[in-house]
Image (cartoon, rainbow, N blue to C red; front, side, top):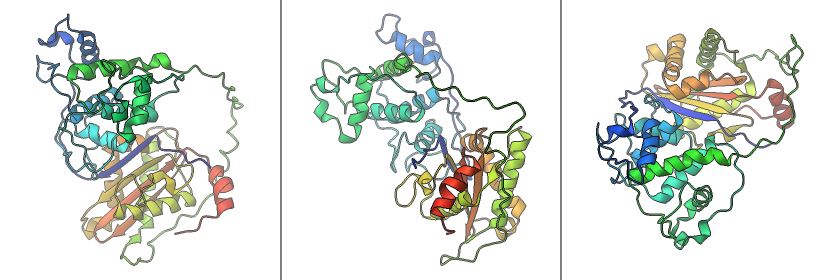
Length: 402
């Protein structure tokens, strides 16, 4: 069965943060952008859309080099990332720190697979091929179907200089006119000015014109008023484990009471917002147990073996993870207080809150793994109805408890 990739992923650790809000400017605010300049229209678009805020109140600095930090900030603003995003995140690039203007956008890019690796190099000039890669990954994650277009990639005299990992992105970017090159060259490793990047974002904004028309999909059957869909009534009462598991070789254990309390508080929160309660399933809890324990080894949305986190199971859509360091026993052993700390931390982070309150999720499970004074919490979500797990997965494969 094809694994479904998450529409949103999030990870966090309780920390403090400072972020700089974006501000919307007008091209007329910039004294260094002439109406006669070739890039005037691009800067006008970027300023009106709130993508660029200038290097000062009156300067756009069109000829200044665009850095990687600047670029990911603009891409994040295009997506609508809030300045508070990632303020509780623990795992991050080793050279991206809270308080820097690009911090929330770099964290967002990492969470969504747009940027990866241990270092982001935010102050390094961004190469043209890196821009193509970021755009390509962004569109793969959040875009829409496009009509096929023949790439101009091979017609550029220096296409052989494109790094192997960027070739698909550059072929895509040149096919849809996001990158057009100059003088028959792509200059993949060259940097770009702020004016050039504004033009590239304007090109990217025009992708809608290549959107593939819908293929007359079959109409979704309308349920008879007052009747629930067939799977809805399939809602067996699963017995949730309680207490604590036996300690493993690392001295860690699963705190089932804490996991149950976290799930209960999340459902209370959802009910207060008019949302459905998330239904518990033991198989999803099995997978959550695995991921909670894996977080000790690698606290990110990648498993220790390098696979994407959601490959732990089938039909999973969303993951929230949490790491609480050094909790004293009087808090850690107070189930309600500890659960509230976890839920509050998720709620106070935009990405995690969106996950908890997502209106299309049906099934979920929480796992809490405690080792020493540290608590690792895992929340897995799925849009799948219960029968998906029981008839398609659980009965056929009989996944064992870990």
